[in-house]
Length: 457
Image (cartoon, rainbow, N blue to C red):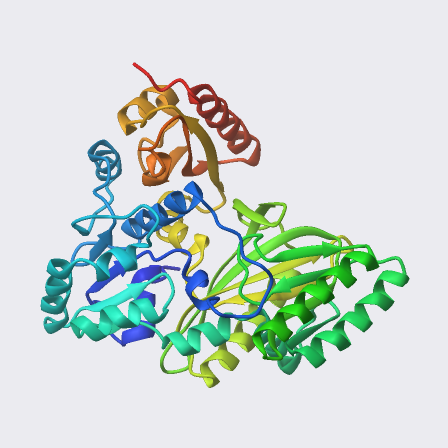
């Protein structure tokens, strides 16, 4: 059975028109904006890592198509674009900011570019929509200054839905299984949660404390010692006294041993229709996202439960005014019990950017692995040199096995300072069998390791 590709489905869901013209903006780290001034756990500075994360904006290039536009911090490597067009990928119009600050998101760079804002205003008059990774006050400012319509919900709604406290509340309301725990928005609720957590620890189990707006391993602490919990309690209470407010945004849950992390996505339409898009098995290390396995290893009962959870959550979110892509994290316990919601993400997800490629380049019944490969480089690495190093395992065409690079900007994003720098290569590894995917993955990992600090001619 033929199904409508994801992007026309998305356009229909949020605008009613499958042929709507979108201006795509990959404003990764939108959670940092949502989390500003939220009384959660202490936030850390990311240093050169921010430069890499901010160049994840290039993922938006592969959501857009002919007739669409994409806004980027810098022009893609021309040999990378040639690789994509050689695969038959039809690229959108690419527009870059006049001057990018590596430590700024693409949205901040766009707001600083008056000429680009004028262009966006022209596109708005032609009926274009702004489609973003997630809607914050920054993207709303772009809309306000240009007149372009945002293809999604308000920043206020997106921020509210993205809170882990909201996730717990909604899961309880619609009757979905989740780890025992408490959502805390006041000091009184936090104190009650701490008392409950001490009982869990006394029984020999562990708890997890989560910042309501933490992401990708940031703002999550596993606690197995009452003294550590007391230390966190003092820290939270001291901050409340200092600010003179009893408002907080934290979740305390019992730790659940798991077999697998999952990520699934649905799209909520303006008319209330909820479309299930996919479920994938997430690959994480210490809570940090590292990739996806496609398809997820679920039995029929578990997949049916995921689909029903997506329907229930999507309908509930629409009631609260949310429209657009929703990503949900879930997990399978080591006893095979499914926990269908551990948090709701009111934004695109890494999986979102893989979906158009998956539809086109992963044949039915095949296996794919979405991966990021860390690099340590002494100088910028051109795509042509990477191509030569990886050799003929790069994907040659649709229907064959190989490695499809889906973001190259992150490889060299942190270049420019003194000494070496860290980068990431993002790719989809596609093959008929899991064993062959592992072979290709190991080959690429080995090549990338060999490139470390050896980027000279």
